[in-house]
Amino acid sequence: MKKAKRYPFLKLQRQRFALHFDNQSSAAGLPSERDFYRWAWQAVKQHHRHADISLLLLDEEPARACNRDYRGKDYATNVLSFALDEGETMYAPALSDGLHGDLVICPQVVFKEAAEQGKTPEQHFAHLTIHGVLHLMGYDHIEDTEAEEMEALETRLLNQLAYPDPYSQDEQ
Image (tube, rainbow, N blue to C red):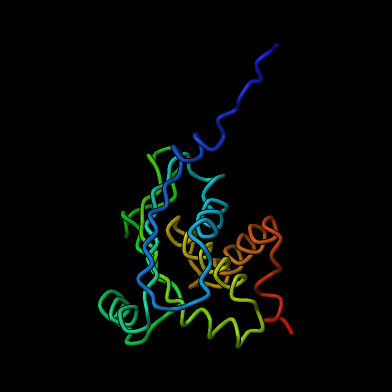
């Protein structure tokens, strides 16, 4: 009997992408580590051969402290991104040995925003995970043209995962 060929996709995927997940939040009803992995992988897979990202879920007070200490803004925000090579050219595939950075997500803020925006928490967590990874990759939304490019990429990546356009309600 012939032996079936095995394509070691998952092994290769794990060699290319590592997500270090740490849930320090007391919030209930959070997506699984596997969900966060899938969302981050969606953003990374076509742009980087190697990526190593830490994702930390924090309650409001520790998230507020991070935002205050690193951005000078004294409130808890939905997602914070810290690229390892912050301040340098971050998206240069030909020169880069990979993407390295940290994401901090505050579930309480995500749940509140999802309710306000009429989205499911899962949709909003998926969006903000991809949004944060894109920041690690050097995308930003300060200028209108940058924002349009980033939003279009987020929408495309989320559509590939069967999520609706996160910005569709903004146009109403």
